[in-house]
Length: 490
Image 1 (cartoon, rainbow, N blue to C red):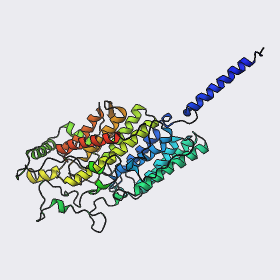
Image 2 (image 1 turned 45 degrees about the horizontal axis):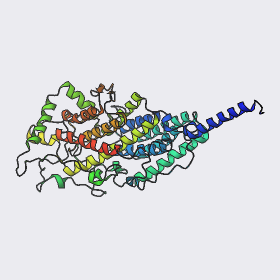
Image 3 (image 1 turned 90 degrees about the vertical axis):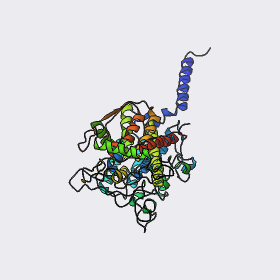
Image 4 (image 1 turned 90 degrees about the horizontal axis):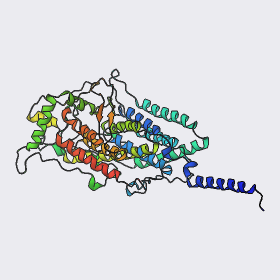
């Protein structure tokens, strides 16, 4: 006869075995995954980027999206050990040479600490040599490079102090080291892109003594030095050349060389004639009519989406990041969702910039300012004015087709829809409270409607005709689809 106390002891032992088994089969009991944290570390670094980007000269339109892509990729790869449903991207052919390391330690990482370390490392280097806008010393509040670097250091230290209270010293140190290790590899990889790395130091490429050199006159002027109809030349407010004519050579992450060109614009002349294409004329007349008789709604849309001007707002591409940050808050995203969305958005904006600028400088089409002044009204100017410098009638310093705003809007909207679904209601409060322009919040019932409004806003502003905007949206969506189709998930 067995003693009665053995039965409860065996039962207790069985329970312990069951608990032990459950713990081993569920690694999140020991090691929290990325999804167990909130979005805040990504949101805070994005918001700082937007603050610095406002004053960073020559960081728009290409260098900003490029920086966002590398930082987004680094944060994503940092978090891969704690994102079991996601794949690393480093094995893809386009990531060859990235040197992104494998994580060989135990997965006991404090992921906010690792992400914080990666962002601090990369953001300080991305802005390292950038010059900053000066609004004549008295208008607006503007950063210097030293102040921007101090803001980066301050945010890093503030988050480190917070995270040290949340975890052990060993876990904190391991996590910080891992974040910096990945960031260091990504930074080194970024420096090997000869056309993208530090391109902000020579945005016009118009100095024959520097490489690369671009002479816009060869494509835009005839033998007598007269502008060829339909072709772009610098405007009065930007007389020195065009920005980033070689940006089409910058590294992409979801786009190959055969995909770097948009559809062509309609021809300026009807085939076989010297008669201006009626569509070309009609769409320039649409710009003229809209700008000379703008409704309140047109003015609101034009100014709400502009983001063209250094020192006034962040640039047009990271405007989509500013919207994404609002969606993080609206959806109360976890860190995994934020990390994925951020990488998706950064790569999309980067590839949009490369493909759009490659197309712009291939087709080299004129701006409405060229056509309208030559054929309709020599005294007409765009509606784009800089409230801090006093410059009036500004036209962006690069060819028109396709529209950059429209490409970023189409691609950024696609990226947002890929994460949260297209039919998402939100209120864009990016410019709420601004006094320099109409920045009152606007409501949207879908991301695609938002992206299209971003695009069409360029018509009442006077800087694009409709074909520029329509092809830009289509092109951006095409790029966004390619980025979404990367093998993110297992």
